[in-house]
Image (cartoon, rainbow over all chains, first blue to last red; front, side, top):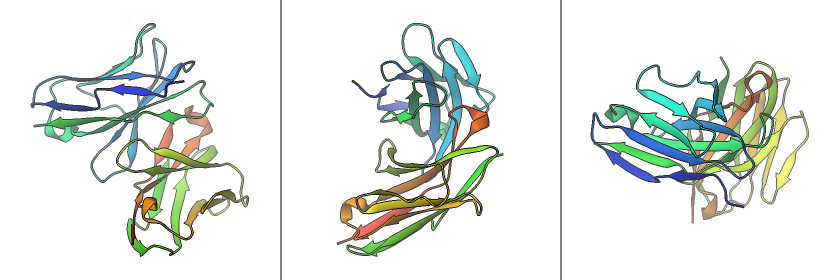
Length: 113
Length: 112
């Protein structure tokens, strides 16, 4: 049973480009969470999604960031017009239900140059 | 707003020492407190605590929760160099689905 799969693991983007991070939850999990970890900081909640629905996006920056979890395919975190401050590790997690144990993926490291 | 504060920020010990990590929290409708170990990759789950006063143990690691005073400690005995990592504390609120609020972490370096 594969764990939470994230890709790419490392991504380098120039300022102003777009970054797309993908997350495939564990098999049987329909709840996906995205967290961001800035250098030397703890993880910060960004968004909580179920299939085709955004449940809680209270941690998402108001501009340039969006997330989706379509009926088919992985969840995608999209960052438009990236800036240096977006450089961070982005972790995806999934759970089978809103009360179930959360499992984290290996993370996607975004570097903006 | 839920809040988690960990202390110390970092510490350096020698192999064989015992370390105690602290986590204090403020959360609305507390459901659980979790400890993770992070070594330059995904956080690895260590413990989930929901009840006060019941120690959870896994090998040389143990943790306990005090829901009255709103804190938890993580102990590591007979430390080894492989224990070097950032230890993260997180709380989960009943009101927020599975949303976790993390502390800033404690960086532990174990020297040979």
